[in-house]
Amino acid sequence: MSTDTPRAPARDPLLAAAKLVIALLIGLLILVMTAVAIALGAALVFGPAEVLAEIGGTDAPLQAYWAILALMLLLEGALFLGIRFLLELRRIVLSVEKGDPFHPANAERLGRMGWLALVIWLADIPIALTGAWLTPYLTAAEEDLQISGDFGVESLFLILTLFILARVFRQGAAMRDDLEGTV
Image (cartoon, rainbow, N blue to C red; front, side, top):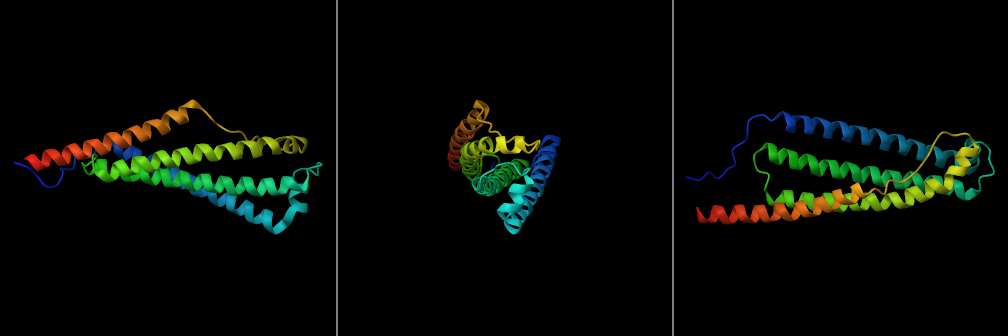
């Protein structure tokens, strides 16, 4: 006796909590993206003289202005990719909630999450380098802003785990399809 549609499990508090946390994180990233976009717009409107004067009138070269603009654009991109990552995760949680975790789409989502995580990790390199270059000027201006990178091995393990899970889910979906074909 086989069923064509997966049976939805009873309400799972872990999945409900995951959906709530993901929604909150997406909202937070959107808020931060908005703040960075406003700061970027202000920097473009006020121009180099105002921005460089704002960092304390230090002897910051004009390149510092362009570095600040580049930094804000890189941050916008990384935040956008973070939102995309969370949306993929949300779709996986929703499919698990429906009782169909080994759907082929979840394998693709996990693969995309791995690529998104890798690009975010790689984007952190120019963000950290730009931040390190700007730090002396911000310190001289007595700004309490430190921009640094996180090149932790934990991030690489997450990326590797996502790619492996994508293969596991792909294989699980294929095995499920084979099993359904024999019943």
